[in-house]
Length: 340
View 1 (cartoon, helix red, strand yellow):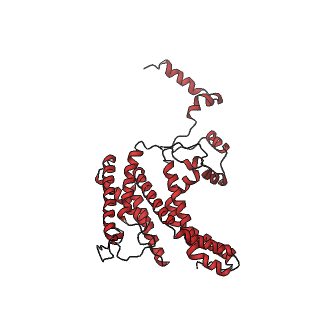
View 2 (cartoon, helix red, strand yellow):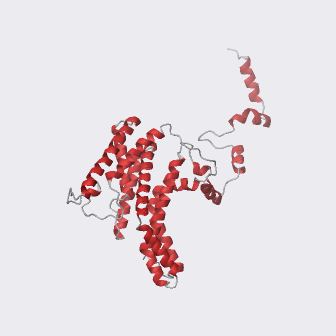
View 3 (cartoon, one colour):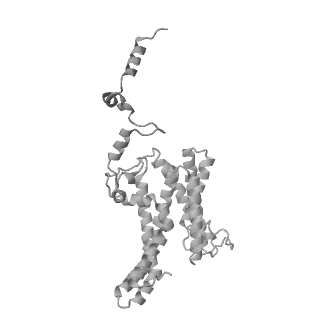
C-alpha cells in the first residue's frame, strides 16, 4: 500500500534537525513536565530564577493575612476568626489565673517595696472572682460549642477529630492529676463526646445532611431542656444519685467529684448539636457569609490562632506557666522559678 502525502511529509519533517525556533513555537505547549517525568532544563531554570520567600517573610505573611494564611478558598474565615478570639480569651483567662493563684504571692514576698505588684495581684483576684468573669467564661464556651458544631458539618472525618480530641483529653487528665489539679471532664473531653456523637448520628442517618441536621437539632434541644428541668430540681434539694460514676453526664449527677475544668454532657453537647444544625442552614453552599475585607485584613492574626485552636488549648497552660516562670527567674525572684 502506498504512502499518502501526509505520511511523506511527516518523514521529511523527521529528517530535519530540531531547531530552536521550533522549540520556542511548536514545543511551547508541552514545556510543563508530565507527572513522574524529569523536569526539563527550561523548567528548572524558570523555577530557580523565581524569587523565594525567606523564613521571616513567611512568618510575616501569616500575621498580615497573606495567601498562606488564607489557605483554601473554601475555608470559612469567620469561623476561624471567632474560634481564634475565643481561644485567645481563654489564654488570657488562664494567664490572669496563674498570676493571681501561683506567682503573685511569691513576687510580693521577694519585692516588698514594689507596691504595684500588690495592685496587680488584687486586680487579678478581683477579675477571677467577679460575676463578669463567670458570665463571660460561659458565653465564650457556648460560642466555642456552637462553632465546634458548625465545624462538624465541614469536617472530612469527624471520627478522626473525635478520637484525636479524646486522646488529648485523656493526656490532660493524666498530667493534671500529677499536678494535683485534675481535670476529669473538661471542655476538650466534652468536645470529644460531642463530635463522636455527631459522627454516629450522621452514620445512622446514612450521611444525609438534612436528616442529620434535623436529628441533631431535636436531640440538642432535648438535651438542653432535660438539663434545665433536672438542674431546677437539683437546686431545690433533689438528689438523683449518690454514685460518682456518672459525674461526666451532668452537674446534677456530680456526687462530689472534683474537676478543675468541668463541662458535662448536659447541656454542653446540646449546644454543639444545635451548632451543627446551624452549620447546615447557614453554610449549605459551603461558602463564607462575609467578604474577606482585603488580602491584608485585620482579622488575619485571629484566623491564624483559630486554625490551630486545638494545639493552643492543649499546650497554652504550659506556655503561660513557662513564660511567667522565666519572668520570675530573671526579674522578680532571681534564681527561683516559683512554680517548681
